[in-house]
Each structure stands twice: as structure tokens, then as C-alpha cells.
Image (cartoon, rainbow, N blue to C red):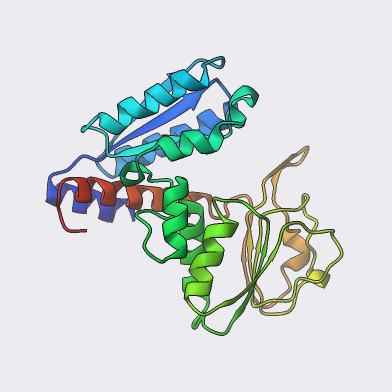
Length: 267
């Protein structure tokens, strides 16, 4: 996908520029930023990292966002989450401040609202990544059942809208107690504890997307016990791995499309 986007950007004569606002020095956040920076370079783009101090004020952060909105050399803007504790209360305000036309993460409440009406400028990359997996593994989504465990604005809520638009019957479970059976054609497990989902919780043939992330003494684990469910006839997108690499690919698609549209070029 990156090579294809690189060729398309070269053919259109554009070098998409992504600005990533990173507040503080969280190691996990820096790792994700590095991955996005490499991906932007791979598609012939530029990544500008705006590193702000841990104690930056909300007003200063809003001014930084407004400046990037006005910068015609920047086509996409990301606010790397999570934010320091003193800024969390203003998170929605920061996301709403990002121009919808440059909101390549799809987090602006305006884009989230437009998704319900089927006309968003950009859709959350996590939801697009999960939908890509579902499209590849499920022949006909219409009439299928999906169970989404979680309540996040970046995955569960937009994915619900995408699935409903395709005629899928969707049930959302904000949390999981570790005992309920997860009976559905498609299960997306965002909330849960490490390796808590076992084969006994699932129906044979289920498409299971593990979107959990837990640090354990044995390394990174998801919500699913991969070894325990390996005997089920179905599809499993496990952790480590999961939708992460595909999510970044979808981000690069959004960034490229933003650059094309801002240059009045056809997608």
C-alpha cells in the first residue's frame, strides 16, 4: 500500500506533509510517532514533529493547532494521544480545533458527526483498518452480526457506523466481565484484560479482531488467548500485530487524500 501511495503522490507531484503534535516525552507515544514518521517518508511525504513541553498550557496548545491550520504547507495534523493529565479535560476542544480538512486521524467531532450521515471528510484510521480486515474475511457483511466490546471514539463508535451502513446487525458491549459468551459472526475486542477471551467464549467460524493492548511480564498481549483459540475454525487478527500496521497504512491514505484535495487534484 505504501508503494502504491508513493507512486500516486509522485504522479500528482505532491509531497504530503504531516504535522504531529507530541506533548511531553512518553516513550510509548514516541514509538508511535516514529512509526508514523517513517510511513510518511515511505509514501514520499514529510513528517514535521511539533514537540511541546510536558507543562504546556491548553492555550499554548490551541495556538499551535491554529498555526498549523493556517500553514498551507501542512496537509494533515495529528495530536498524539494520550495527553498529560492536566490537558485531558480539554481533549475534545483540542481535537475540534483541528481543521476538518486536515483531520487525517478522523478525531474531530465534526468528522465524527458527518460519519453518522455518511459524508465524513475523514474516518478514524482504526475503524478503517478494522473494516478492511472485515471486508477481506467476510464475503457479505449485510445481515451478519457483529459484537464490539468497548466504547472508544476512535474505533468502536465509528466502526459501528460503518457496519450499520453496510447492513450489519451491531451490538456494542462497553465492557466485558470475562464470562459472557461472545456469540457473533464478527467480534472486535477492544476492552478487556490480557488473554481473557478463550475458545469457550466464542462460536466456531467467528472473525475475531483483537484490539486490546496490555504490557505483561511475558511481553505485549491482547485480550485474546491466542493459543487457546487457535483450534477454532475462523479468523483471528492477534496481538502483537493486530490492526496496528494497517492503521498506519490507512493514516497514510488519509494524508495523501488530504494533500490531493487541498491541491484540487482528483483522488
